[in-house]
Amino acid sequence: MTTAHYLKRFALGLTLLGLAAHASAQVQVTDAWVRASVPGQPSSGAFMTVTADSDSQLLSVASPVAKDVQIHEMSMKDDVMRMGPVDSVALPAGKAVKLDPNGYHVMLMGLTGQIKEGDQVPLTLTVQDAKGEKQTVEVKANARGLDGMDHSKMDHSKMH
Figure (cartoon, helix red, strand yellow):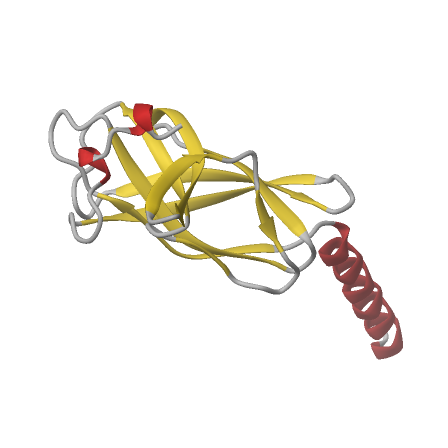
């Protein structure tokens, strides 16, 4: 194969790679973690930072460790803390969106077993871009100890 022929094939390969990269929005998930639970605890929270390269929205999260997974929003209104499920979370292009205990976060409800500190908890995020194309992002979240806000002591049934 001549050098010129090789370079043409190489350039074609790069062009195809470029097309593939632009075919769907890229979503990056960092700092994913799940709060460890105590035996018999029915729910826990998952937290992370999500960045999409184009205007998108986080539609849902799933995990085999819970029967029901919902995205919730914590907010303060007139000195009253409210929490409840939301349909989606906006992911503006290039902006890191934090899911943390004090804002949007993921509730893992109906835990199938105890989440122990150090466990790797699989999460599947479904993200939809502005064109309506959906993609799933597989994440492994580290389970961390019980620090900060303790969701197990909150009665979700009275907050909706």
